[in-house]
Length: 302
Image: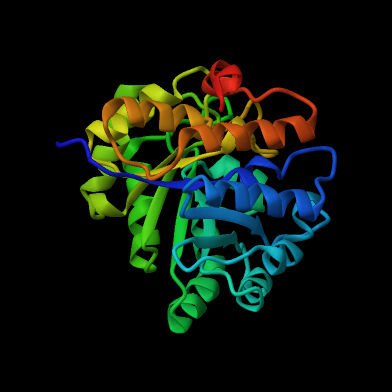
């Protein structure tokens, strides 16, 4: 399988990255983060989520953020919409696309959205049907695709492929395979992608890896070697999951872009601008980025 010459990075820092921050991040800071990312060359960005502010208070201002950003025609501004109320918020805010989540882990699904995998797909049906009827593209993410956060629960490649096929049949244009707790390794990554690519087109497969055990870049390389060209990542390595014990941050976008640049793969992203953005949000949060590249390049920026 040929390694792609160009990839699309889906930047999740403004939503997945910030959602678990204990200190509230003002809307204006989120807007500046998004606009700095766009200026660096990011063309697909997760701007927020229309979820219950009771459960995810950091995302309560998503409508305000969406109203304040300076839209560009060449950029896709996406939001997470777990239900019809969220979908209505996305439509009102004129989101370019929406995103839904399921999981390959029954236990995680119960902890995250309090229902089985099958029930979650039934719940999402009104959202996906409405989006399809309105011509709004949507992507779907599968959490725990490379392993479960709960002892004794095995996630097989076939189980991941089964969920992926069902979501694709519901007209998701992309299925992102998430290693929610960062336990995956390259051979495991390839096995899951191989199973999924047997039931949906490879060009519809994306990946979303966390770096809990330091395996994320190796897993992205494995995915690239399988021909995957849709990569999720988070500026400064922000993020985690409140419903997955042990889940730490997403892989840093700047680490991914550095690797891609070194491989001659075009992401369209300016690394120095991206690193400046990583330091911008990290300085606001009062801690350095977890990204090795951001730390290494800090003193070398023009």
